[in-house]
Length: 97
Image 1: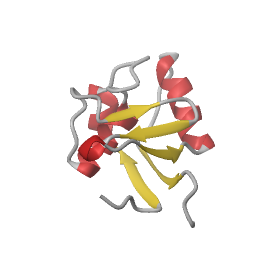
Image 2: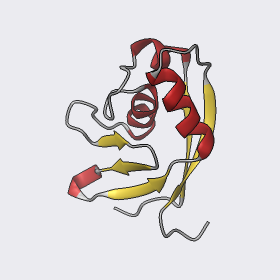
Image 3: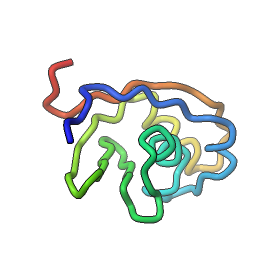
Image 4: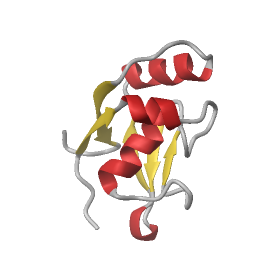
């Protein structure tokens, strides 16, 4: 599988409602990515860290950089602060973009 250089990720109100604080695999961003890629959150196909997103389609681990706006969202969500839906672009680590 060839990974795209960028992923445009839209976190919806439903992702925020259904997301779990302090969960790398079930936070709102992980849910949004899983929806975008038709991946599973239960199988840990998507893991969102503080600096990178790890995506494991077809057994291959792919790293994307987490932009500052997404990292701030994660901190706020994990702290129980009110957050709003938003869209961001994640770039492939070592990609050409």
